[in-house]
Every structure is written in structure tokens, then in C-alpha cells.
Length: 127
Image (tube, rainbow, N blue to C red; front, top):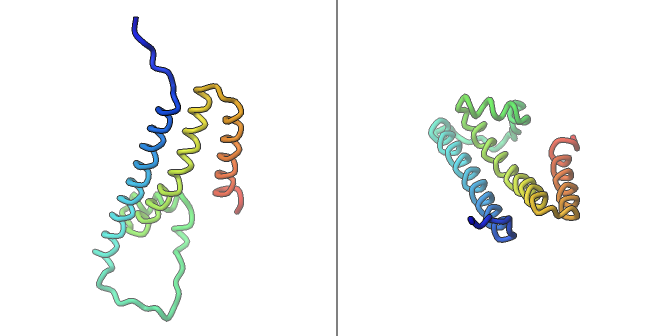
């Protein structure tokens, strides 16, 4: 008779640790790639610090950032990496919700769902 592997707190912690490491590594790699591409294309341009230029409007929305990153625009790639960094803790909370559901821990599911709702609202609902 094969022994069925149960869902344990240790397994949850290992998966969450891996998720966080992978998310931060992915985000850092994407930002680094975008930064290197930016330096290759714009590294020789003189800096003008007298006039402040904010982010272009095409880098203020997720769809535009993804479009710029797909077309290999360096600033879009950098912003995509930052979006991955922001998404990492959200993915962690979403996975925790899944783990609590698997363990059938309803109290922690409710708390985690509230945290997830607050995170999502703070990103998309507050503007």
C-alpha cells in the first residue's frame, strides 16, 4: 500500500520560499536585461538634469508596459520587471489561500482572502 503524501505546513513553507525566490530572481533578471538594453541604446547620451521628465504615458498602464516589453523597448522591459516584483508577494498570498483551502482551514482562508482583496484593491481599485 503506497503512503499518500499529505499537505503539510513544511511543504507549504518550502513552496512559498521557492515562489518568493523565483519571483524576485525573475524580476531582477528582467530589470537587469532592460537596464543593460537601455544602457546600450542610450548610455552615450548626455544627461540633462535641469528639466524633470516623468514617465511617458505609455508606461503607466499594464497593457502598455507589456506591449513595450514585447517590442523590446528598454523602459518597458524595466517596468515589466518591476511589475513582476510587485506580483511576487501577491502570488505568495494567493498561494497561501490555496494552501489553507487544501488544509480546509476556513478561518485562515477568510483572513488570507481579505488580505488578497486589500492588495488587489490597492493596485487597481484605488485610482
